[in-house]
Length: 229
Image (cartoon, rainbow, N blue to C red; front, side, top):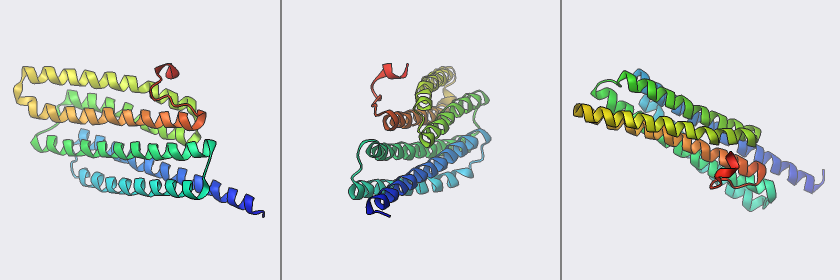
């Protein structure tokens, strides 16, 4: 086998391994988010410790993937689409790690709420609906990355608008609730923090999808609202 073919094959294997690691990290983040939301609804606060432990694994994966990206750039000196892929991955894992951080915030908020009482039913329904929308965004963003599907990535970006609307609705309800009954202020603030964390998870899924579009099409659409209509 000629040296150039051997090097090319090894490079392809490096990139394939890098993508696999990103998807593994994404799977851990999805699981972590789902577990934190389930704990929020069910009140099973014993799940919180497992969520925090998973966060450590996610942090370790981010560091390892970043190191791999740096080493591949140094060794292979990629260009064009290969370079876009590596740069995109470097940003995607940052958003995945931050999504994991938000899941940890949700878990800690859940523990505070359920130690003080229970999550009011009307907010439990709203939080679950918001969380399902955000978690769907994360799943589809990772699917778009796995398939290098720019069209699906654009759909995820559009879905962020609905998550933002739901989040604002929950916040308005909580503010009204606190004004009507000041005794609910502490719990309401914790619910606000959980809702904000879920909304931020949606934002990170949108960011991941923007990187997928960049990798696939070479377009930076982060500040181009017209590109997602």
